[in-house]
Length: 264
Image 1 (cartoon, one colour):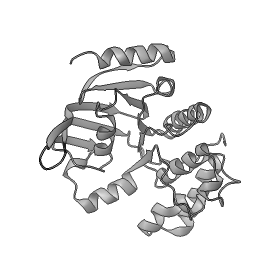
Image 2 (image 1 turned 45 degrees about the vertical axis):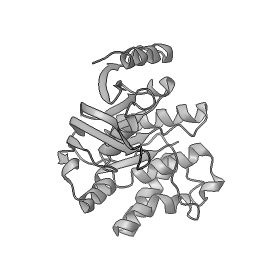
Image 3 (image 1 turned 180 degrees about the vertical axis):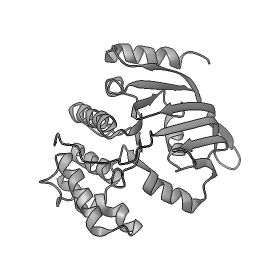
Image 4 (image 1 turned 180 degrees about the horizontal axis):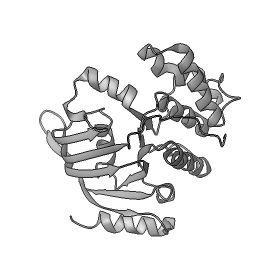
């Protein structure tokens, strides 16, 4: 990858997010045996300024649910979500569409690339949907792919790219509109350990050099080590958080497990 960063985030505002008393439940089962599952039971979370942060917790603790609510992909049942001084929980559907397209970036475990499009076309897709200036967006998309080491792969379709390359294309697409906040849901889950480590380092570099707030859901301690702080969910509540500085992967996993067993 290129070592010369491009200007991804020209905003001078420090990125920030606030979560206050957020609750979310789902109703599952057949009509004769339906019951509610409380995914989030009143989460409070605050992050100020740029940086790379992780959310960890056991399966079913509410990690992905929280990220989806932050990204405006689902609605809260109660509580408030504020990202960049915007009340996400109060937005209309059309406002949420613009929020997801312009104010944040989203990266998933599955790359969600369109198989009939080249890498460059996949990165440009949000700008086509937004009717953004084509020349400016094409220049930005090209620069992103070059920075991510994909200069020779821009015209390749996803089936001709490795998993790591596809995920870098997905990240470039998420960064097309220079969002100050990036949400990543298990972004290394479909990658082998080597490519997972490379991707985690890329995200850390983006957070540092472009002053972006990146919040990542992961279950892998070796990936969370690249973050500066880990937030741990337990049964739908925030059990606590800790800084990763000075911890190896084993120590980080132990700290996360201890918080997962602690009742708040």
